[in-house]
Length: 457
Image: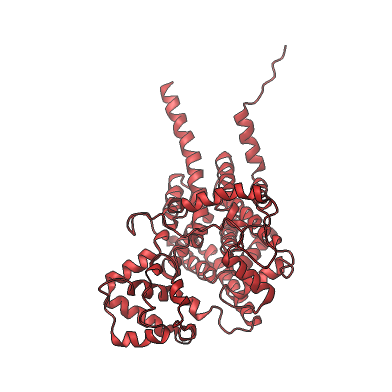
C-alpha cells in the first residue's frame, strides 16, 4: 500500500499566506470598509466633504486634496467610494512597499496582513484623512524608486505607480518637503550609492510641487498654504509658553501679540496638550492679523525662545511628545488625542452606518488602539524600531534605505511644525516601523529557536 504524504496544517497555512499576499491585504481592507460602511467621519472629515460639495476650495488642507475628493466621489455624490479608495490604496501600498523591502516568504506575508488588519491601517483607511493618501503615496514612491537599480527599470507599472504616488503625496503640504529632503539625503550619501534614487526623488518632488501649485492656481489662490496654518505651530507654542510661570515677555513682544489676541486670552494651558482651540475661539483672536504678518509672529516666537529657552523647549517638547521616543518628554501620558475616529458625527450629508451592530463591535478595536497610542502611535519609537530592524535582519536594499530617509524627514517636519500631538501625522513611520519589526521577529525568532533545538540534539 502506497502511503500518501499529507502536508502539515501549519505548512499549508503558511503556503496559502505567501500565495495570497498580493490580494489578501486588499480583502482585509475591504472587510473593514464593509463592516463600518460607509466609513468613519469626524470633524475634519466632514469639513473636507462639505468644502468639496459646497466650496469654495481653500488651501487649508491643500486645494488638490479637495479636488481629489470631488473626483473620487463624483462631486460627493458617492462618498463611500472615497473611504473605499483610501483603505484599498493604503493596503495595496503597504504590501507593494513590503515586497520591495523584504524577501518573499512567511515572515513578510504574515507581517503585512497583521498590520493591515489593525485599526492603524483598516480603521484609519476608511476615514477622510489626507494623511492616509499621503502615506500611501510615500510608500509607493519608496518602493518604486527603490527598484530603480533593477535592469528592467523603469517598467510601465513603475511609471504608473510613481504618477499615482505624486497625486497622493500632493494631498498634504509637507509631502513635497519630505520627498525633497529624502532626495537631497540620497545625493549626499557616501559613495554615491543612492544617486540614481536621489535624482528620481528630485523629479517626484518637482512633480508634487507643480501639481500643488497648479491646483492652487485653479482654486483662485496665490499661496499654496494658508499663512495661519503655516505658523499654527508657533501660535500654539506661544500660547502654551505664556500659560507657564516665570516667563519673560517684553513690551515690544506684547505690542505685536496684542494685535492678534488679548493678553488674557493668549495663555491657554490646553495648548500644551493639543492645539490652542480656546485661543482660536476667543472673541479677541484675529486670524487676519496672523495671515498678514506671519513673519513677524515667527520673529516674536524666536525672541521669546531666546529669552526663555528652557521654558520654550519644555512647551514645544510637551506639545509634540507623541513624536518623541518614550520618556524623552517625561513620563508617558495616557491623555493623548484619539487618532482614529470611532464613530460618525452628526452631519447633513446623510452619512450613517448601514450595519450599526457590526460597526459597533469593530469600533471597539479602534478605541483600543486609541488607548494604546503611547505605544502603537509613538513615531519616535517606531522610527528607532525601523532602523534597528533593518540592521538586525541586514536588510539594506535601496527601497528600505529610501524609506528610512523619508521617515527621518517626516519625523523632523512634524517635530518642528506639527500644530498638535496627532498620531496620524506620523502614519508613514508607524506602518513602516511596525511591518519591519514584525518581519524581524518572524525571521529571527524561528531561526534562533532552530539553532537552540539543533544544539540540544
